[in-house]
Image (cartoon, rainbow, N blue to C red):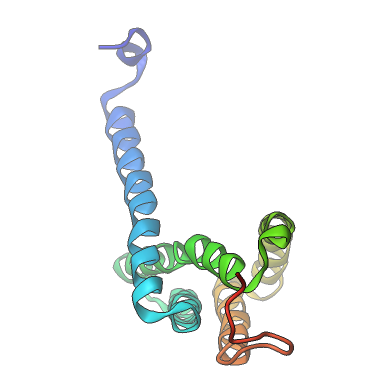
Length: 162
C-alpha cells in the first residue's frame, strides 16, 4: 500500500477507484467513436454525436429522479467523446498538409473558448431560470448546430485534401 493511502478513508479510496474507472471508460470511448466515425463517415458521425449529446442534455433538464439524471449524464458523456476523433478526421480530410497545424490550433482555441464561456452562461441560465432550463437551452443550441450541420457548409468541398 502506498504511503499516503493509509491516511485516506476507505470510502474515499473506493470513490477514487470509481473515478479512475470512469476516466478509463471515457478514454476508451474516444477510440470507439473513432471507429464509429470511420464506419458512418465523417458528416453522419458528427451529426450523430452532436444529436445524441443535445438530446441527452435536454433530457437531463426533464428528468424527475436520480436514476434518470445518471442515465442522461452517462449518455451525454459518451456522446461527448465523439468530438475529438471527428475534429481530427475533418482537419485531415478538408485541409492541405501545410494548413493542418493551424486547423488543429483553431480547433483547440474553439474548445478552450467553449470551456471558458460555457460555465458562466450555464450558471446565469441556472440562476435566472432554474437548472433545468440551463440543460434544455444548451441542448437546444446543440440541436440548432445539429440541424445546420446536416450538410456541408458554404465553401466546403466534398473532395479530399491531399
